[in-house]
Length: 68
Image (cartoon, rainbow, N blue to C red):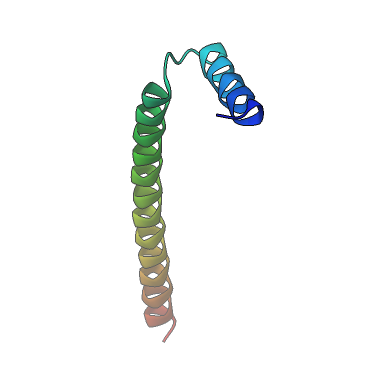
């Protein structure tokens, strides 16, 4: 390893330890779990949005039927 690469990984290791991670593998596991949780939250938000849009259309159509 050249000096730059060695310094880069040394800084990365120091930064990870500052954040409470003992290894890059531990950080990767945390990151993967966090991404999975975020993807689940996004999927739930999309489901809620489409459900709300459906409710709005139902309200709109039921209101237009009452007006006619």
